[in-house]
Amino acid sequence: MNGPVPAHLGCYANSGGGPSLLPLDIGHADYLALTDPTTAFWALVKKDRLAETLAGGPLLDQYRVQAAEFARELHGLRFELKPSAVYVNPTERCNLDCSYCYIPREMRRSGDHMPTERLLDALTRLKDYFATVMPAGRKPRIIFHGAEPLMNRDALFAAIDAFRDDYLFGVQTNATLLDAAALDFLTARGISIGLSLDGPTADVTDVTRLSFGGKSVHDKVLDTMDRLRDYDAWSVIATCTAKNLGQLVPLVELFHAREVPTCMLNAVRCTLVGGREVKPDDAALAENFIAALERSHALFLESGRKLVIANFANVLLAILAPTARRLMCDISPCGGGRAFFALAPDGGLFPCSEFIGLPAFNGGNLFEQPVADILASQAFTKVTSRDVDKFAPCATCAIRHFCGAPCPAEAHEMNGSMEKVGAFCGFYEEQVRYALRLVADGKAGDFLWDGWDAGVETSFSVNLQ
Image (cartoon, rainbow, N blue to C red):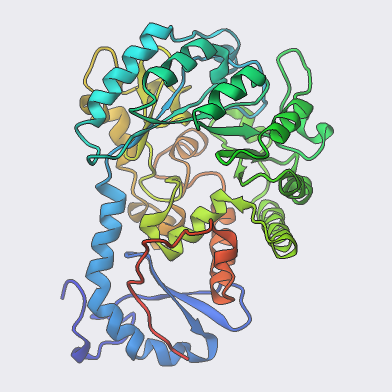
């Protein structure tokens, strides 16, 4: 029988006619999780009631009724999205020589800028495309990314002013070129600003992030953070490597003290060799990452002010409200080529900025082909068809749709195929276990943005107490 099983049949969980619920040890004293990975359904069950729950009762009865609905919702999230954002790289150049960067070093050192007229033309073409796929009244998002977008500052600022009524803009920058005039320009227009900092002190940051001339940028980033303190739309990304793992707790303390509203503690991407050389061990990364989360929570309880760690918050949302998640890395297929794509300075379109150093994933040129045709190219479909339901070990994993086996670029380059896991399978598993423990203890909301559940409806609720 296909679809949800009528309750009156009285099928048992994990039998041939019932839903297949997998027990998952989440490391909690009292609770474990039951999951149906085909629908991303989950439930927390008291350990001493597991056998009783699997034998039948209200949880299984209600889940049988709603399973098909959950499957449709998950399918829509995975396969029916249309792009709503573009990561625009207005230059190939960067003034920093970060050891783990996913953009090839020579490209960053001596690459090309996109001329102003070309950038304006690109945003016009993208505007025409978005008019065919975006809901009326909703603006697409342009994130100026890199390399270092402010290396091509005049073109970037001209584009923002020319299209300020058409797009929501953000700039991800290393902060070194954010002088007073640049900050005034961006903040006066309400542009989202993302900074990067990897350590609480210069000696930690400088291990992996220096200028091409070997100079530290740590103090410059701190200065910019201080000047943004009263601005609402800013955040900081820290890349977690083997070189800074022991400093994640003091780094969170620094971010909180400087009133950073949102940060990300991202595991280093291992797409290129430089990232692999500073790859941390999964267990060590999980231990230090969770310690940083715990410290952020303690600071919230002490001060009443949250520091949201967005990449973990996204894992929580994947569990609590899958369609409300804000990032699309933790799902398969990922958001690359589906929710967003990336524009290179020469007009090449890639599924994500992570692929810009990989010519095989150039789907075509914005100035020569329609966007829709490029999105349907083999370079894009290789990414958008990646499906964790179809390859080991993900196909039998209980949490595969809370994780998504990121990142496809990483899996392809590091492990040799799209049908492989990325670099940090164990780390993502521990994040999910920790997230479910927070849910069991009623603490999940402390790690999410205020108002995250506005407009969110509870679609399943059974009290097993």
